[in-house]
Structure formats: C-alpha cells, structure tokens
Image 1: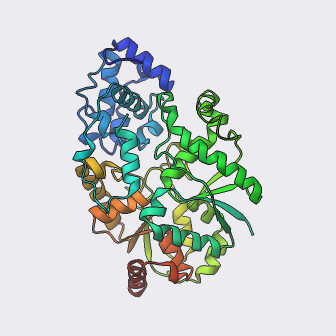
Image 2: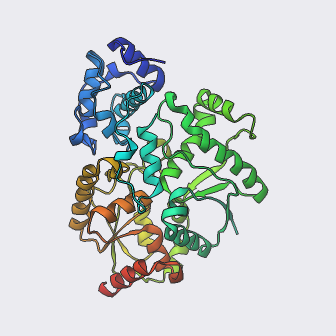
Amino acid sequence: MAGLRLTPRELREYIREYTGREVTACMQCGLCTAVCPVAGFMDLHPAALVRVVQVSGVDLAELKSIWICVSCMTCVDKCPRDVAPGLVVETLRELALKNGIEPRAYSQLAVDESTPSILLVTYSRKSTG
Amino acid sequence: MKTLLYYPGCSVKRDFPEVERTSLAVLEALGYKIVEISNWYCCGGFPGLTTLDHVKYVSSLRTLSQAQAQARDLGTDTMLVLCPFCYNTLKQAERLPRERPEVYKRVAEYLKDELTPYHGGLGVSHFVELLAERLSDISKLAEGRLQGVKVATYYGCMLLRPRSIAIDHPENPEIVERIIRALGAEPVKHPYRTYCCGSYHALGEPEIVRRNTSRIAWSVTSSEADVVVTPCPLCLYNLRKYTELRVLHLSELVAYALGIHNVLSPDALKALNTLKGEA
C-alpha cells in the first residue's frame, strides 16, 4: 500500500493506476470548479487541486477538499479532458483513509432518532476507511 | 401482468415507509405484481469509484446474485429500485461483469464460496423509469385530478450521473416532467433542478446543505411552482429540514393523482388537497 510520502510522479501514477485517468491532460479550463456544487467550501477547488497534483503533490493530512467533495459526479461528467477531478479526489480520499486520516470522530456527529439511515450509510462510506 | 422483483433498501424500509407505500401502490394500480426479494443487503450507499475501493461492490453483487435466482423463478427480468442511491450503486454493479471484468473478477472472489456468481442480464429499473414507460395509462387513471397545479422537479444527483447509468439526459432531464404532464399537472423547469443538495453533509457539514438547499429553494420559488417533487429520500429529507418549500416525494404526487389516497400520510394528503384547492 502506498504511504503518504509519494513524490508528484508517484502520485500521478497512483491515480492513473486506480482510475485510468491522466491528470497531466488537464488544461486548467476550470469547468470542474465552475460546476462544482461545493467548491466554495473547499481549501483547494477542483481545478486547483488537479494543478497541485500535476506539479507538486499534496499533503493529505492537511487537505480539506477531499472531505468536502460529495461525489455528485458533475465534474466527472463535464470534464472536456476526461481527467475527472471527482475520481482524482476519490483516490486521494481513499489514500488518506488507508493511512488512518479521517475527517472527524463519529462522536462529533449530530445524530439523533430522526437521522435517516441513508445519511449514516452514505456519510460512513465516504468518511471511514 | 408483469412481475417486478423489488429491492427496498434501508431508507424506504426504515425512514420513509410512506415512499414505499405510495410507490408500490402506484405500480400495482398500473398492473404490476410486486415481489420483494427475500434476502437483500445494503446496496453499499455509493458505488466503488476507483479500483482501490472495489470491495464496495461486494454487497451489491451479493444482492444481485440472490436477485438473479429469484427473478428466474418468478419469470421476470426486472428488479425495481425506489431509492436513487440504491439504483445508482446496483446499476453500476450490474454492469460490472460486462464493463469492468477485471474488477468484477476480484470482487467475485470474495463471494465464490457462498453464492452462485452474478452472471448479468438482470434489468435494474428505477421507479421513475417504470412510470415513464406507462404514460398513457397514467393519463387515463389520473382523470385530470391535478389540473392547473404547477409542479417543479428536483432530481438530485444519483439518477443522472454518471452518464452511463443516467435515466435521462444528465444536464437537461425531462423524464419526471413527462410524468407530471401525464398526471394532468403543469411541469415547470427551474435552473437548479440537478444541482446537488449537499447530500450526506447534513451530518457533518450542515452549512453546505443549508447553502445548497437555499439555492434550490430560490430556484423553485422563482419558477412559481406550487409544489416541488423529488424522487430521492435523502434530497427529500434535506429539502424538508433546511427549506420552507412544500416538498413531496414524486410517488406521493402520483398516488394522489391516481386517486389512491388511502396510502398517503395525513400530511401529504393535506398538502395535496390544499394544492388542488388553490389550483
């Protein structure tokens, strides 16, 4: 399993291996960020995140964007270069989870009797390893 | 009479029984026989998006394997799904043997000692798709009960993306609007009908859901709709919790229009009677 200390080249290869997508194909058109329904809540919006992955690699322990993306697949559908930022994010999220980084403890969640199980299931799928 | 093998999923069984009640009643009124799968498992919530998380497909393929055997016994090739999350996940799992055989092979390894592997060929159909196949029958049964009512649709994400499993055009869907027209009501389009409501962030980052649902509320309100309907239980929960919109599950509107009032919750019946009174 890959650890967190991947060089930019290793990270790009890792993403290629698990998604079949090539981040170097991104031409920074910004369409992903324009259509992203949660970009405003991210530290690195989708296009910026792809750019950082292209050139310098990321610090997964610090990156908040991977926990904000909801996998709505809008950017994946729209990307004119088939980079599919949503899948790049998913790879980074899984890499973080496999290395023990999680967005928050379950005890911090506002769960009560009215919380539907679909909310717990979908949240868990994206936030636990 | 066509038989549908029915996969419920957690949300309609535990939290939204009125969605199950109204959806099944509508399909029965259209002449379908519905048989619930005897053993079903959580769909997994989300499909595996990368080959790193192919394990997420295990429960979906386990369900499909059970369904395959039962469908054969019942003489049907259609599995009915009500929840868009379940639809999205099961539909992508169903395509796995054909489209990503290398992933399918790895996942099937986990299941080889317990089940007959899923071979493919089961049609995973969402409630909305089944309604859209029967528009003229719906029109006849509706008898114009919703005449003059303006209905906005909020689609959410899971029925439209990714494109490979979309039930209609992902950017400009009209499938629900066609159903609304068949009911005798007037569908109104609005700009944010496919914009994500914020989904599971209701649990950990509610400000995202608050912001996104407020945009959707603005969009619906500007369209001058009398009511907004959604096919998704999670969208329904978020829109009800975070906005002042009058929001119903699509199945509730259809059940009312078809005159099947005994399956509606008192709140839904009241809202629908008010709508009709206003129209």
